Image 1: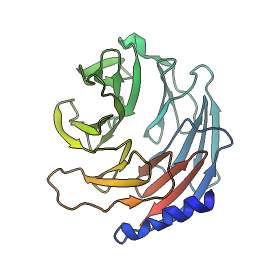
Image 2: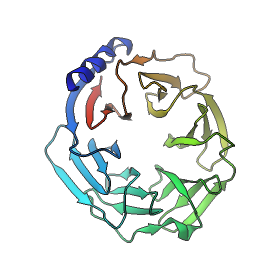
Image 3: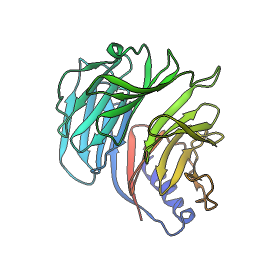
Image 4: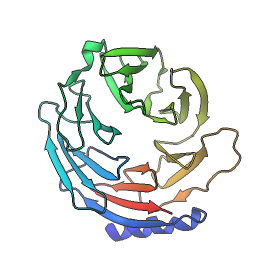
Length: 267
């Protein structure tokens, strides 16, 4: 499996202009991976149930921590080098940990902010703010988690039969992907600022001013310019075998295939 995945990724290189992908590390998890990410300091963070592993990419320094009181962790969102947010949808709560995965302060109960069924959160580049989607009210919210205050909110975001798949902030805008392949963009105060037709996009990230989409068959990464008026578009990166998920962080590309995460530099 490792050899095949490596071969598939290398076969993508000819489609990326002059860019080359260089494998720097392969991480194999002994337990099923629930979620994972790469932070801005080139650390890999992998979550299995309520356990988190953190290691320097292409390095030996590791941290390992279990959060039994938080329950299963759905998402992990690095805010900066010293602050990481852990979200449990089952417990409807957030925990803040530092760069050693040590919990800072009390666990935040999202119901105390008036939320009933939070299913997604994502970090903002403003260090005390996060984006929160509450499915019960179908509301997108900008939240100051240190002051326990909702700063902005819009209602009825989802429509019948069309649910949110993922949301991320990029360059002071919030991007929200829906199950019909449409993506909405909002500015830093949640004012609607545009929409994209991404067809069969199931997951997305950002690289080099491009929205990067994983298609429904998980066999291609497609590129759409962030600037909707831009004419230049990077050709698709084709892959043979389905991939579970991907992460783009700076010049790093992570590809998950089951319990294996392969990490590449893009040059």
